[in-house]
Amino acid sequence: MRVLGIETSCDETAAAVVTEAGDVLSDVVRSQVALHAPYGGVVPEVAARDHARAVVPVVREALARAGVAAADLDGVAVTSRPGLAGALLVGLQAAKGLAWAAGKPLVGVDHLVGHLLAVFLRRDGAPAPEERPEFPYVALLASGGHTAIYRVDGPALGAIRELGATRDDAAGEAFDKVAKLLGLGYPGGPVVDRLAAEGDAAAAAEAVPAVMARKESLEFSFSGIKSAVARHVARRGRPEGQALNDLCAAFQGAVVGALVQKTVRAARAEGVERVVLAGGVAANRGLRASMAAACARRGLALFVPPFASCTDNGAMIAYAGALRLAAGERDTLDLAPETKTALPRVTRKGGGAR
Ligand code: KG4
Ligand code: ZN
Image 1: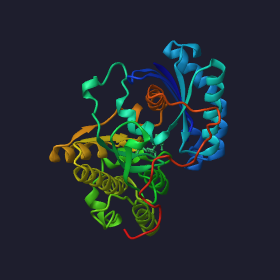
Image 2 (image 1 turned 120 degrees about the horizontal axis):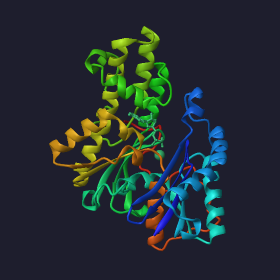
Image 3 (image 1 turned 45 degrees about the horizontal axis):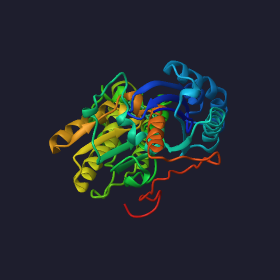
């Protein structure tokens, strides 16, 4: 089966052709980062308008690189939720038009399910099938828009359960906001990651508080860390040189510590031996190293997809769609965008005791 996947939920216009075995035949990602950078974050209307400009050429390129015509496809998959309504609408309309014109089945994909299954994608034959995780696994999904821990028993929506999520900012959002405070540009994750590697977290420990009081909770909160950095900068001004590196190290250490601690705790509480990383923050070197060490200590097997599978891409949407098609599922041309995920959520944003 060869399935085209289209992704336009946020600030990447992406399309890919993938088989139901997860083999990536093409994967085209056109980032809007430069367009949004002057604003320090994604501007929804700007995103939607750029998707409208880019979606047809990106889809054409994905088909051309895979060497397939629309007539050769077995289906068209598209991110239908969650995301920015106007941005999602562009991908949906493109997918519907193509599916209708070529007479192919259409399936909507929940973007978060795409991220959670991206570990199965095979690029140039890697990883080998036996190097991919079996179900069940516990997955940490940490990106600019989402941060949560899931138990994944299978690819279907009903087999995926949120164990805990962030109460406020997503982890990537915290990186982006702190980078903005420190004058480091957008997106913040990669630059903070680079500076943190040269810094000493202990030297800036007083600027960054411990993350979440209730140790047994699987919920995250990152806005307090961000505010602490903001107060530190308001008091002392923007640090430079080594002091900047140290502050980045302390901030990253606090975020990574919470992500690792809670993911490992979730795996142990669920009695699951496999841990999977997903989302753009999974590119963080501190997170990768610290999660690897924690999993090794506890006898957990860790699966970290390549960077191209962690950040937003069309391949994960095509693959999740291929599994839906293989299960006999179809959507109609009435498929509408939804801003929220279809996965049930256990964490309430904002309220409650921590
Ligand atoms: O998954 P993604 O490409 O897009 C979505 O948000 O869905 O994730 C982008 C986020 C941004 O917030 C970016 O700052 C963060 O991932 N990020 C990182 C790193 N690379 C990207 N955060 C920490 N360390 C990194 N190396
Ligand atoms: Zn994403």
